[in-house]
Length: 163
Image (cartoon, rainbow, N blue to C red):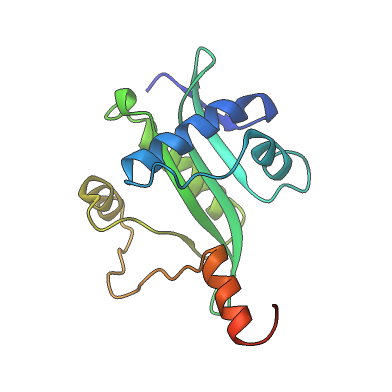
């Protein structure tokens, strides 16, 4: 693999944002990224960070990232959510994704947590196969549910909570 895995620092976040944007394009959502480098620095660095971003780096170039944060399960307690695992296209197939994935699993396990979870698009068969080969269970009967700002506003207006 020939890359170092470490936790991202403030000066890494411009490259992290570039990878997030690359993923959005790959997932056919090129205009969906609203987060900024300043947001990544504010929420992803320091003692009270909201997320941890592992990076795979070679010669100052970030080749991939794995971004995780804590969740709480009423069944399992504190868990880790893997938000994104991204490897730049030209570096795929070199073990970088597996190294980042292994780091996330090790991080979760070393904290004594009972679950790590994530979402994968059903059409991303390479990722689905990658996860299945690792022993992960891809739960096809569950649907991801989201509500964007406009939908939240419409709902709250309909309930008389806001004007």
